[in-house]
Length: 397
Ligand code: NDP
Image 1 (cartoon, protein in one colour):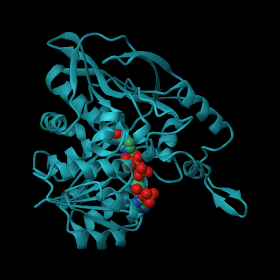
Image 2 (tube, helix red, strand yellow; image 1 turned 135 degrees about the vertical axis):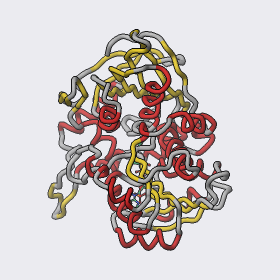
Image 3 (tube, helix red, strand yellow; image 1 turned 60 degrees about the vertical axis):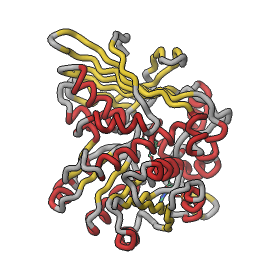
């Protein structure tokens, strides 16, 4: 019996629930809990496999503990927001349940992305014989596993790593984000950091631009360097990496809107006085922007997310590009969701399968690259996200 509790009924939670239900060889019971139970019920109604629903405030440890004691899951998949990571980990420790998430903890009042808070749980999870798997989405997540595959099969040493995330799709809206707008805008407007010669180098947000020629008919697109959390664990666990950069595509239209919103103060995350009450401008902006969940039926085109690893094999220089292509409309047909939520939710379900089947199970707190990449990628391919490996040469970014 492998019972899973999924927390968070947003875009990603919908995909996780669908994909766990498809994997009934592993998941024999599914409960979906979130702040607004009606959203859980709407998702459960789309799925043939019985999905129980519950209401929970994941900021509240006693509420979480009571739910865990009632549902008795073997695993919690946390796809609420990064602010809830630590409270959910605390509840898992108290009750004795394994934990998985897709984004590292962030304090509400600072856009600060680092693993220190969650890595600090290592001894407590290990001592209780429990496992926490961090960052089992696409990026972080599959990008870490692609890097582990490059290190295992294609290179003796990785020296340089470029993680490249393209959304070549379009939703036809003047401005909208593909996942939670608050989390997305905090990430994109944060100062850029990349790893070079043993240290982090900081530059201003989105100030470094290149063009990259994407495969599968997507063609050249502008990519912008930004900080992304998987670089922190990858340079720690694969210390031969001398340089690591993360790149993402943004349309000129998205950047124009973002610049205006920033200039007028709408992306601020501190409180301001408004008509006698305190509001956080970015949270207000989220309330007026399109709900990412509503973009599913509108979004057309593909995503291409992958890594270029450069290093040496048998004493010679070598490069390998490992990537996935995902089609927004195909995702919507399968699980009522666009590819951004799909590419996050499928790896979360697969990470859960790795833990529950014992293929990846070790007490403690771990990142994805610390396990054998091959069983994960095999299951990921059969569950909708195959990958392509190309050996060749790509221009320095
Ligand atoms: P959404 O905003 O669509 O969904 C978040 C859900 O969490 C909502 O249903 C929300 O409830 C619920 N929630 C928020 N706060 C609480 C709380 N205190 N208690 C209980 N439930 C709560 O976000 P997404 O689905 O787009 O993203 C989910 C997660 O996935 C995020 O952490 C995001 O950073 C991560 N992510 C990771 C990616 C990766 O590749 N690794 C890529 C994309 C996203 P309500 O509906 O009531 O607001």
